[in-house]
Image 1 (tube, rainbow, N blue to C red):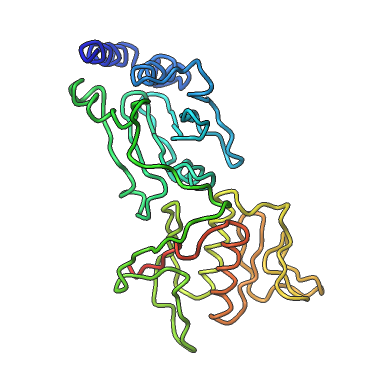
Image 2 (cartoon, rainbow, N blue to C red):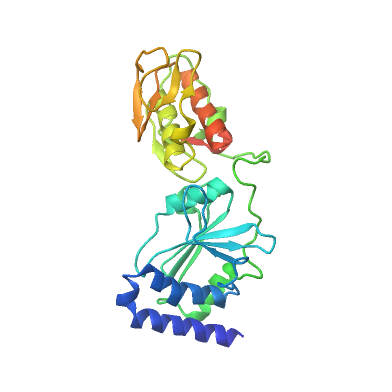
Length: 299
């Protein structure tokens, strides 16, 4: 069996080299000629939708494959590109975070990268392993690819999707570097002591002022498909809106400090303490995000 697997990897290597020009221009051909055969090598029946579902809809987008456990839950999403092309990792990892899928795999049929999407680290530190069929020996490729083997994949269980009941999680952060949003305390008249806000999918945004916390939280919710037009307007007391599709409050007055995010406007005129509360409320109500998983960093 091992010899047959090594022979198959060598066959895929030769195919990638021989048809490089065609594969670099055609994603579907890459999937048919390189990705599907490699998944079958690892025990996945690509013709069985209880194991592999192509073009899986998450509500926010469509990963190219979903690898399914025997009980019907999703083990991992795969993003596929034509040979030599790369994936938008932040987009796909956002899909994983939204529906509670821990693992994401990016591949062009030759290079494979496996990420723990829910790991509380920057994107560069989420990668578990990677291999390259063209530049590594077949035996080494097979050793690394065992993480995707259908009958013994990965080492942990994916948590419940965001939006379902979440277990209590203690996020450990070096207090000299930063704090969770839930632990942020506002001192009257003080400047914001942090420069980066990091969300659960690893995306990071620059912050300099207290109102940036609210603006960037809303931006993340919009970019990840959590905050949509049908949820507007979002009220802020009886005579004000927090988010609306135009910078006008229900009493007809215009926003005092509007921030434009796509098709939305966010009112960011308020005290520092209230801005932190509003950012927290937005994330909890419209992203179902635990504020302990949103980290403020000094770097």
